[in-house]
View 1 (spheres, chains in turn green, yellow):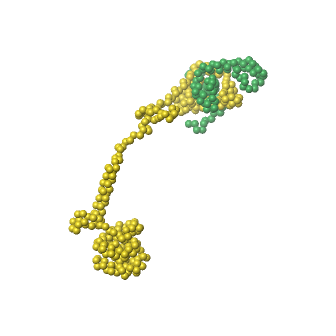
View 2 (spheres, rainbow over the protein chains, first blue to last red):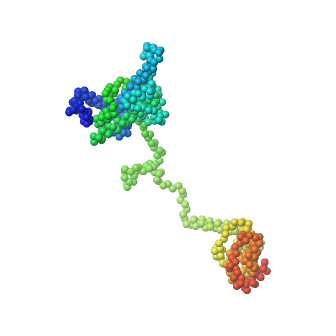
View 3 (tube, rainbow over the protein chains, first blue to last red):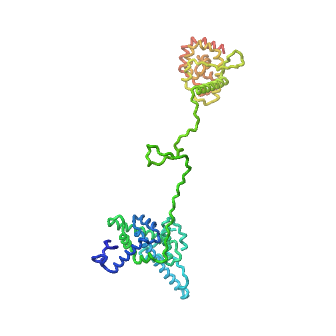
Length: 140
Length: 321
């Protein structure tokens, strides 16, 4: 269903589109199932908010699944970025704590660390996605 | 996450995106976030939504459709490099919270302001789909005045009374301020009459232009002269009437003459020059610009022509004075 008629050149699936590689077929099937599940899925961000930003780009859809798919996909992207930033933060904290000579291995992991997201961690995480972050000139 | 409260974005939709980002970060294990980072991620989320929409619409229009399908969105996402792997897991993850839709701001219903009277229905020529007529007080005419008296007799009587009052007051005023005749011969002056001062050509006063009075003292002086000569004229009325033919030439040439009194001295001095005459007329005024205007051109031929007849008259006047 999905992905059959996009006109995308696929060198692997030469002739019969979907029925090419089994793993690709599985992915497409998975996506189709997901689309069905989106029918009665309540996204984090209300549909109206997502639809407003889509409308501001000229995108108008009556199908709530499309709006929800976009909503979930964008949030997943942000989530991935946040995940990377968290890893960055953790490694940075570990290296900082490891640098001093007074190293008490038992203390650090057990202690409840408070992680704060800063641009120091966010910038390299975004750089992995090809996004360069600079401080806006007039940001307060 | 305590810094979320500090973000004071006014746009409610952006506020919701802010909440979503905060929630994702909290799920990931962050305890707090810089405002700068939160705003950056919110901006990224917003611009990504817009960008996906724009890209998907472009793919949709490229295919010749107006309503986008799921395929367009997926192509747009793939083209932007957003991986779809694990999207289902992310959608059904544990601990997911749903941001409730903010309550719809209910439109305040306009209160009905002071219904006055009952609204009338449309007249037959007005179609029904037109708005209803406003309250009657907006167009009904209510007279607030009394009907005035319109009887002819009453109005006529009123007008006559008014006219009589005005005339009476004016007569009273003139009798007190100007010269009067006494109706009876005695001196008590119980019934004063306004003195009649006939000017021989009656239209002369209307034809003569008069200047504006700048110097009040001079005006007073004129009145003094008038009052003094008035006695003369009143006594000489007969003489004047007799010598009307002789005087009319003088009367025309005398611009400033309001009454005959000014002619009398002039007649006496006629042989002399006009300037002398003017000086004699206004002995207190030595400034020639302040003197009453004289018309010397006409004055000269007239005496020559009229010398033989008027000679007796001036003599009489002089005697009378």
